[in-house]
Amino acid sequence: MEKKLIFLDIDGTLTPAGSNTPPASAMRAIRAAQTKGHRVFLCTGRNPGMLAPVLALGFEGAVACAGGHVFAGDQVLFDCPMEKEQLETGMKLLRDNGVFRTIEARDATWGDEDLGEFLSQAGEGNSELMRWRKALAEQLNIRPMAEYDGRPIYKIVFMCREMRQLEPARQALEKDFNFIVQDVAAFQCLNGELINRRFDKGRGVRIIAEHFNMDIKDTIGFGDSMNDLEMMETVGCAVCMDNGSPKLKEVSDLVCPAVEKDGLAWAFDHLGLI
View 1 (tube, rainbow, N blue to C red):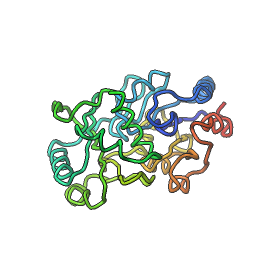
View 2: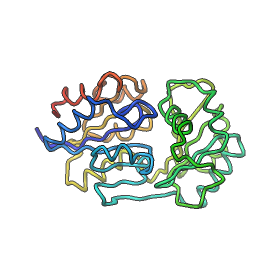
View 3: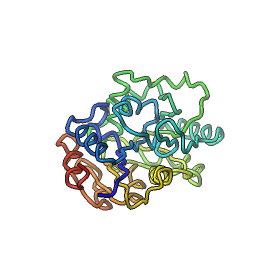
């Protein structure tokens, strides 16, 4: 079998939402695939600081910050933080319209101080919301917004009650940023991300494939939510978790069992990677 580049989303794909611990079956499958010469990368909205505990399990690099920071081993292949003016405009318009915000630098994350209370009222079933709720509850280094120290920021994560709250920021920034709203329903809550149009997970996949002189047809991507869409549209084979977005399943080549039901191990075996 041709050697493959494998790209794994984290929350809801490699791990249960909000967890840093993959199922044992997933890690056995990943190790077996690596033994056969396949390279396995993370492909996530998390910044390097938040993905570090998972990266330490033996992955070969990552498309991090939803494509804004890409690395293989210790070599940075792409790095694209927001411009200061873009950040200031987005933050002000979101705040003025009652939108809760978190901002991510390469190695740190800050959130509005009352975000935890807001999330406690939101429903289950959304892997991004669950990750942030768990991170806040366990104090996984998400600092109060008042402590933001000016470091370059790669993306803004937003949460609000109604779409209209996003409109002023959308009108000001949509030329340069995609407003990605998760389509998995959460009770009385919308959540999503402002992602720079200069990058996405799919372009991150291409950067790594070019680095290793690999044909894009020899790439496989695993995801569960609509922020994985560009990755799924780019890779040679797209695999959606059964716990994932119905819309993402429609554009995927394969749907595998849910993360908690040993889905990655099943898919690795089904695709002949192990």
